[in-house]
Amino acid sequence: MGFGSYDESEQKDQNVDTDEDEAVNVHEDHDTGDVEFQSDKSTDELVDQLQHMKD
View 1 (cartoon, rainbow, N blue to C red):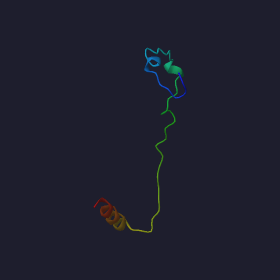
View 2: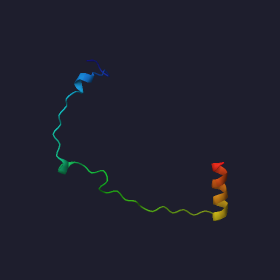
View 3: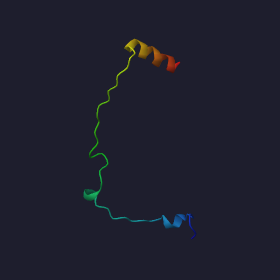
View 4: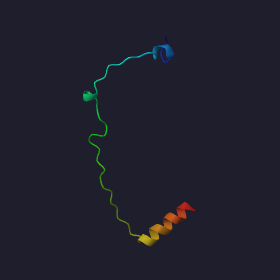
């Protein structure tokens, strides 16, 4: 097969032995964190701007 070609027959019946205990858990070190920001506008001004964006 040439470079970049794809043959589905190569993808059939692939048996991979995996050890769940040694697998990487992508959520293991998940940090929800906090977000803060400062604005010169009042809450009412920000709500009005959001409403304008929705319209």
